[in-house]
Image (tube, rainbow, N blue to C red; front, side):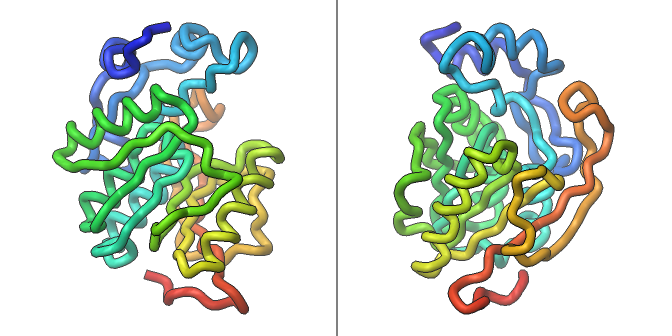
Length: 224
């Protein structure tokens, strides 16, 4: 493993358009297995799997939604949480957000988000941190792509998102029907069929929904 995350991202991922959001290019790995082993994966160390190296369905769908509905983020302070490649953060910045914070526990994700933002001509504030026991700070919009992939992560993430809406943030989630998403507590806004790498998902297309977490008493801004 490299002690220079940016150099590692440049060495093992190539800049290419995102399938469902071709307006955006990301540093992406050609195939997952070799890179997963190189980063020591979930089986051999504390290092997270290289989520940053791929355009996951939830993130692609959420990025598409934000790019097509820029009023969701325009002029607002945005938090892209569990940001991976930073795709959603990059799109939020392109759509006119006043400030975009991209946060992930993996330092390689932070490096990828910074590089990807620069490659697309925008700036995001990339941060390596675990925020899930805290709050969303001054974020007015919280965006989460494809983060409900385990029960432990879903429980912590949903607690964080509920705290965010209680203080007035708008929360949108992109999710390709992962088992741990609390659907009954969310409101669907849109759905897409998103192309994905078969090596990651065992299929070529994932049906993916954009959800909103309603605010207190079922409130929230109108769907944008």
